Length: 350
Image (cartoon, rainbow, N blue to C red):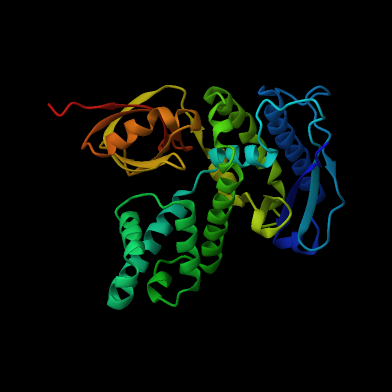
């Protein structure tokens, strides 16, 4: 039998720095975390969504004693018994990473910061003609980001790292505090790690029914605020990893909790007439402009639809106007924060 999979839950900042948490918040958090992991693992094993955790759906997660220094807990999720097969043949961490990608896509704040960093870095390189000649490809990448193309997770992380290290006063004028810059970097680092977690299992994830994934994320969404209860008084941030800093695939702070809780996905499909500015085939994320939208919005293509829609989306980028069939993701005020792309209709030039 293969070994258990390790999932490390870590709280840091505030009381957590000394290995302490408020007991009531911690107890509620433990229960929610157990439900979250058991729900995802039950789905991985059976491809069904447990309405409640019972003896038949429970996973025998084992917990190690908390460790001093921050507040760290190691959870051991047992491997599936020999002779049994998971309905979704990926490690648990890959499926958690994937659903977290859907629950907490890159924040608007991080996207805006990356674009601003790219503008500053582009101007910096252009000012040095000798270096500009040597870094033609980097200049092209930065130019595309400045013009509205969504930076890949790694490009965004590189720019966040640059912003923290540079002495360019233009970064300081953006108004981000050191703490905000570090939070943006943490968010992007976790995004890079999540993509590494499920990259090798993309084919298996693409075969999962979109409606089931949507029901799963809806089931998990309210658990997140309970999992993060210690962030009220005891800690400043929370993470999920394999046990080392370099493998964090879910970074959680108050702003991310608020982002997850405030969003809802419409069931109805609407038509958005606009222009596709960019599309990343690897992540399935692009940008669209439209007179129907108050700003440029990201759209995402569910993994199961990426092969079917790839050529349509790439063709749409060459058109001035297309019709996107989408589901809107709304914030608490009812304004769309992003779109889920269902299909594309090319508008006749005539």
